[in-house]
Structures are given as C-alpha cells and as structure tokens.
Length: 87
Image (tube, rainbow, N blue to C red):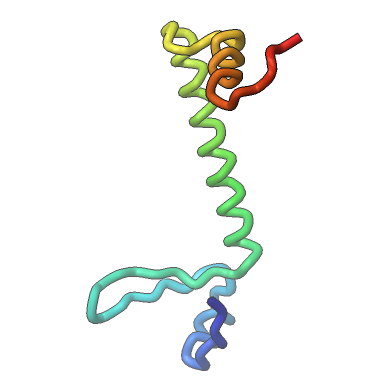
C-alpha cells in the first residue's frame, strides 16, 4: 500500500530524513517512517542474518548427528515424488 506523505510529517522528515518515530495515541503502538533505501538495506541485512542463522543451525544439527545423508534424501525424494532412479 502506498499513500501520500501528510504535510505534518514533511518537516520532521526534513529534520531527520532517515527516521521519524510515530506513536499511536490510542494503541500506544510505535511505528517508524524510514526512507525506502534504508528499509531495503535493513530487510536485506535481516534476510542475510536469518540465512546465516539457518546455516549455523544446520551445521550444528549435522555435528550432532541429526542430519540425513545425501543418499537418504535422494532416496526419499525419488520415493515421494515418484522420480526415476538416479544413474
């Protein structure tokens, strides 16, 4: 959803173009208005951190002997998806 910037936010954004904090006086929820490039970079960094965490978890599982071998996975995929035998 895209909406136009209200005039009352224009000045705070000019004073601090990277971030403006908003509080909903009814719910006390806090929101931040940030520029698109900052948002894009933050989402990219978050995705990279989540990927790194998932890789670290997988490595830990492997070290704990909790993983499956490639052969086991391939056999299960062949069975589950009715694939032809590997050559």
